[in-house]
Structure formats: C-alpha cells, structure tokens
Length: 79
Image (cartoon, rainbow, N blue to C red):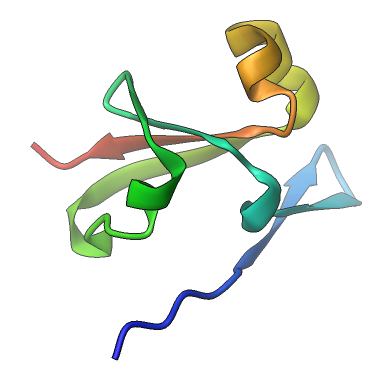
C-alpha cells in the first residue's frame, strides 16, 4: 500500500527564529541541478540522498524566479 503524507520542515535561521515550510506547498524540487516534477519527488529513495537544502520562498524566488515562489527543495544524490 502506497501512502502519501505531508512532512513539515522546521528550520532555524540565526539564533532562535524558527520557521515552518510545509512540503506540500513547495512546487520546485531540484535534484543534482535538474528540475524534478513534483509528483516524482515522493519516489526518491531517501538512502540515496547525500544532502538536502530547503530554500525559503524569498531565496527560491531570487534564484529560480516565479517557479520558486513557494520555496524550493534542493537535493544532492550520493554518487
């Protein structure tokens, strides 16, 4: 049985300021420099992820334009 779920990400900027970015709102996923369709994101094998970075909407919009208006997930796979 395949179950899809939403996983909120809590991250901290600076000292104590905390933000929540729900992954179901993020539409831009970049894996090894290539855009991945949002529906394929859930199929990524977590054991093959070397590094994952979540960009805030402001950061993502600056880097990727309108595509990044809801934030972005940047994934580097293990080689």
